[in-house]
Length: 87
Image 1 (cartoon, rainbow, N blue to C red):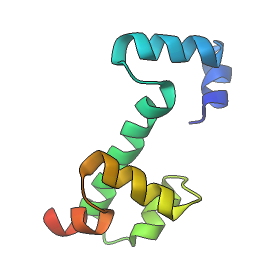
Image 2: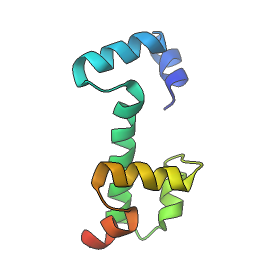
Image 3: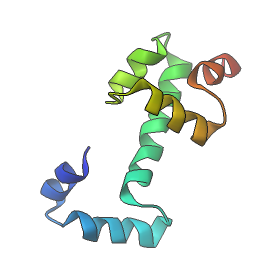
Image 4: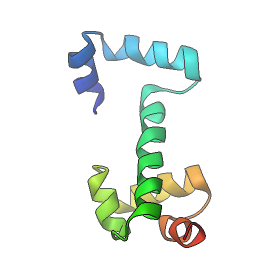
């Protein structure tokens, strides 16, 4: 869900939502949401045989390199290495 969709759904401004999330998590709204997205991607890597590129697309990443970069930053390994470690 995008920040704009969240604003419309909850009837709060994005800045207000960002302040609330930051107050309780010490993360910006984008980073907080990304933790859930990457966790779901990790689950797909271990539970399916889908190609990494398909999982990145399913998670709405239009840039596969960006997905790889964020995944490696969070888990310390590439998506392919993560899948191999959790077989």
